[in-house]
Length: 263
Image 1 (tube, rainbow, N blue to C red):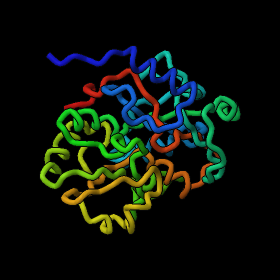
Image 2: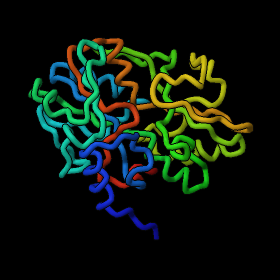
Image 3: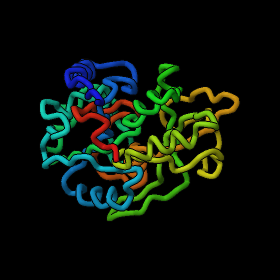
Image 4: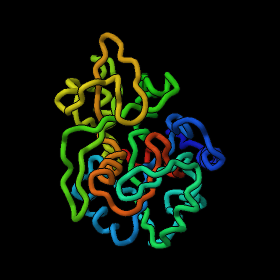
């Protein structure tokens, strides 16, 4: 029988995030789903919902709030304005501010609709349980993320390129890593690309667009998964007047066990 992780650990992790943590959330509350977040004025919510529906690999929606709500069924006691350790405030598609508390920015638009999007951190626990090292966790840094040259399907006023996260995997275990992650299609699922970063328009793995570079050792292959930072690329390309997101790698920790999404 598989034992479920203790929900108290997820709540404790959120309280820690509310107080502010100086590092990404990878490895926090292992066994519980972490989410990307984007909040948009109601006028833009339909465009984004359609954008996510057309691009489910990088934008798998796990929950959508009512306009103005800062609550989610994924963690009923949480506050989406405070329980992510680092937020980004966007104005006209430009990153205007990073803050550990989005309450003041939230008040500017009382009709915000928030989308919580699956995160590849969800399948890192079973990868680690299988003995596949997650290099960014081992090195105590953020996962490297790259803006690719692959267009997402546009929707309404939104368009942009896909973002991917990268993890170096021993060549002999790439198929296993793809199989394990593929069991969770609701949180990006299997990789979108293996090896040859230039095929994605990535020129230099030592210079990620988001997050931190990690060591790639001899015999390892760079493996790329669709990434929930893709909506932030759409913000930069489409320039809506206002948005709030998580900072890449600083996620919202839910009460939902990772196993909930396995098929």
